[in-house]
Image 1 (spheres, rainbow, N blue to C red):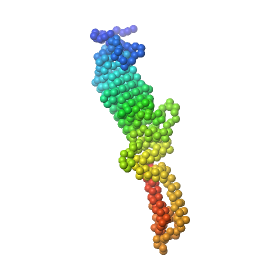
Image 2: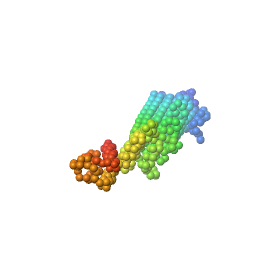
Image 3: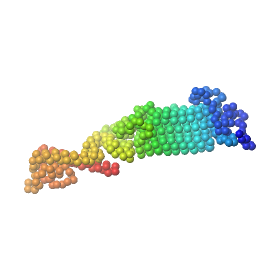
Image 4: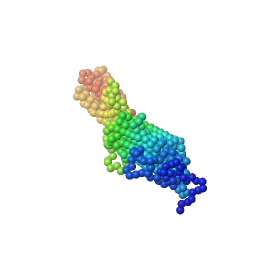
Amino acid sequence: MEQPEPPGTPTDAPADWSEPERLLWAVYRRGGWLDLREKHDDPAQGHEWDESRIIRDVVIERLLLHGPEAHPGHTARLRLAGARITGEVDLSDCRVDTSIILAGCSFEQPLNLTDSELHSAILAYSHLPGLNADHAHLARSLNMRQATCTGEIRLRGAHISGDLDLTGATLINPHGDRTALALDRATINGDLFADKGFTATGQVRLPSAHIGGDLVLVGATLTHPDGVALTLVDAQIARLILRPHRESRGLINLRDARVGRFIDDPRQWPEGCRVDLDGFSYDRLSRLSGDSDPVCSVEERLAWMRAYSTTTQRPSTTSKGRGEFSPTPYEQLAAALRRDGQERQARTVARHREHLHHRALGRLGTLWGIVQLATVGYGYAPARALFWVLGVLGAGSAYFWLAGPLNPIKADEHPTWNPFLYALDLLVPVLDLGHEKAWDPVGADLVVTMTLTVAGWVLVTAFAAGAARTLKRQ
């Protein structure tokens, strides 16, 4: 049994409202739905809908800001579907304690939620020419699933306590700087879903944003061929799932972003997307629980970085053949692998980093890198230096044994000729056995003597550089 209206409570809509607007007033008081949708609706063509589906901006504002009291036993809510909303709905600097549901609607003007305080908002399946919600606060979530927006969605500095759901949404902004979605310095305590058909033509911006849950970009088509398609500069994200659609084009900027778990798939990376990894840090490389493909190998990941990273190796730009190199992406990858107990893979990454680093130093740097790789494996194979020492020492000793005693510098003051000790004294610069200074090589003997001396200094220097690198790493 319905309860009577309390005395003095306004129950009737304003007389100048249209029939659908008066009906919306009535269902609002009961928390019910007003569904004006028809079969095969396309909100993008909402300008063609007739007057029976028009709801003016002033009606929305009146209901949300100065609406009637709820019918006894009910909770007042705005639940509207399939309406053609004319004018600019302006809720800026306002507080709305009830949920806003405007699903499958066609907006004539951008929705203005700037500096507002809202409970939650559902704009799923709607068509908007823009959304201005800078510095808005939502106590729960913002749902724009399958929505279409032909202008900029602005959520700069916004705070969303729940999720931001853009699943299957289509964002197109051909105007100005072509920003499709702006979440600069925004905070989302839950997840941000931009997957399952999400399409953004224009830049998606999340610099300095904070996401307490997942940022899901699985199958998202990000298109900004002449600029940045996605920027996460200085963003903090608990888990980043970055698997854009293969048709995506533009730069993916992850510079200085900080991520807890990072999930991607280099084998499915779009050909048209470069990625900036400089300063990008993550604690763990992970995978989705439903993944059936084998884990991406470290060799595949290194190949991906070489092919698509803008910062791991830049072309030579000087007459000396020097290029620019950023070691950070490799250091982060090696550190993440070590945290997962994959020490062998981490060493592979570290050696590759050293190879690119020396190559970027020019011809001399490349040559010195080859020496370090051959002698000590860039410090990751120190035992290799021992084999070089033994090999060179054996060869030198054999030569001087066959060549016979050298001429002494002082005929009456010299040690007994020993080809092994003479070769050892030449090869190890830090040793002074008295043999090097006692004999006077000439001709071919002098050439071999100089070769052993140079080889000794090269081996000692390479070993010291590798040891220093190892100590620094530890």
